[in-house]
Length: 189
Image (cartoon, rainbow, N blue to C red; front, side, top):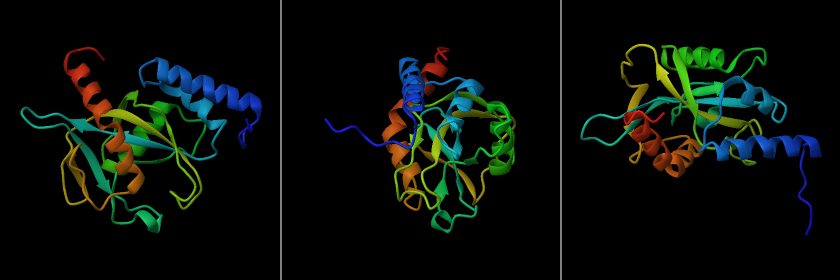
């Protein structure tokens, strides 16, 4: 069997597989700063994706999306999961969540848990190479006021004009999100 090529050393590959195995063993969760600092060793650019949901009575769960207004022309004007690059490796995971949520939705949020495995973008999906996306359940500190740039959408009825990778991730992980919401509702998280 031909050995796969990697930009990581064997030790880095081994550590990365160990971390991903631990996340998978923990039911799709990762815990705070320790794991994210480990990711810094494997990807020079990774993005925190802020997953804020609500589950109204007699309605399917919804996820908060915002219109992308950052510097990437490819994504401008498309709905996306709020978030962005983790720029300062000295920040804690919680500090990154606070900063990015304030920038993206105008409110601070606190991290609850990671969702599923991190997503390492494939070649061609992102104009700046292959960042690593870390999807994180967050709870806003304050009331979210929807507007034309910031809205909740049913998890299984997403807008057409959406950043493709976020839409694919939600389509794949929608059932996991709903399951986690049910666990939280029943006091299991």
